Length: 377
Image 1 (cartoon, helix red, strand yellow):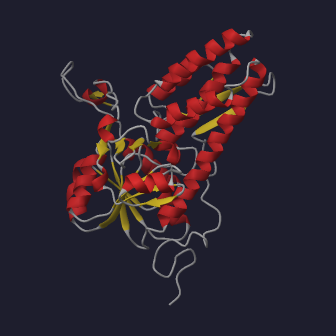
Image 2 (cartoon, rainbow, N blue to C red):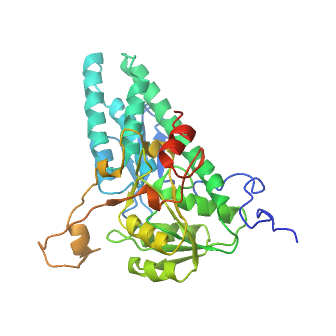
């Protein structure tokens, strides 16, 4: 019996038969991150799809100064480690456009802007990585005009590389999928978190595009509902079969045997494979392990941080109490009541089945696998 087009004989995605990768931005939709050049003066602006307004409104922000870029990152108008990195790179270009003419003052202005962008969110390593890479690309230059040109070229390269990395992660990860199976994902890891089709969700999108019939279960992800507001939105815009569940329903779902794998992203991965991701990921990993369900982390190599021995060293961002005490415009708790609101948690490497990057699939022991396969050591 022959397999359907795009489906291998064993039931997984035949990505070679699928042709080109799914589009990063579906037809008619606004891209997550874009650079728009001005025809008048040769300058440009960073454009971001404001994710705080989704799924009800599609509003594009046009940012022309570092303060507004930093604020957009901080309030989660743009979010997701890869997308934040691309936004940070373009943010440095924005800074360069408004810098003084004198070379020494210009360099000081650029360094200050980089510091402000780098600290907009502390956990996602991609932000500092992208900003530092852009700075390194102009380290030997003095003339402001040349620096502006080079920074824009480097930011565009980072943007294009993330698109390509997402496509590659999708191809690698889709080989792990089974036709007709159901999978669970957490937070938002699709196009709204990257410059491409996504990381973990990108794997499922690639499988769907290759012809696999999949069902994607999506946790709501309190307190900011990245699952219900964003991932469900992405599945709907791509006409993919999905189902939303309360975060507290994950345990019985995994126990039921309906889920064949959990796919999540990461904001920072330590050298030993410990992975920081949206709060709630660690609990899912423990549940998946208890019920024998494979647990996959999908992230580009720019998310790997070999300077950290393990996940205990990852700085975890804590966010405002009002995110928990309010639910949209409605008050959800007593005013002033104490809150602990970590944005991320760390999943220990022993709970992770495999880490998928644009360069392939790494399996335990991760320290040697990541070093040998992905970091060139």
